[in-house]
Length: 215
Image (cartoon, rainbow, N blue to C red; front, side, top):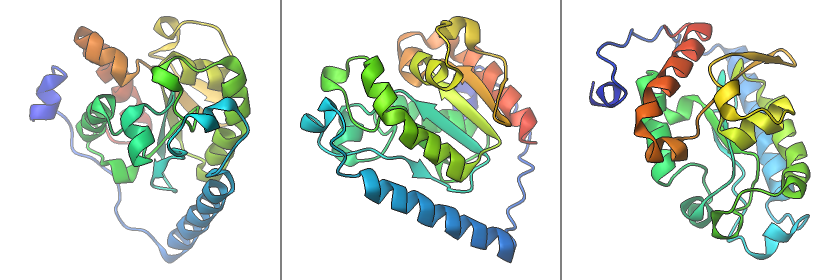
């Protein structure tokens, strides 16, 4: 319960996720994995914007290709750029705790960012960079077809929902997006600076848990 207590949680219901995967489901999962692999190979040497000049490597995304829950963040940071995996720095460690508090593992979900390359000095993404990378993210979503997308922070929420509304107004409610439910919430990096708002994020992820039958 240490993870849950850090969110001010005293009790978390047991997961009702069915771990059994049928032969047909396994075949579909392999197909999605192949499609994601092909997409990653297509763009791992992407040169479509200036970020290609400063990045160490493309950070495509990782996780379960058949995930019911997908997390979308802003952009890779220093640690992600070095390791080639999304959300592995301090903010990523907090995201892992959030996932675990939902009684899931990182391997159960899929994690990606709006940008696939780190902006210099972790600056905010430029509109042109988001526009260039957006088709890759859209294809990832099309392949995975999750039940819920948790949009982490302003840039992810605004990119997916095509709005200029601040994350403080967007968070906490579902938006139907092509049959997928999007739940905007605060970015883990924001929570590192504003730990009191962890309770708000926990409220948001509990709503996701209800939709996924985890609560």
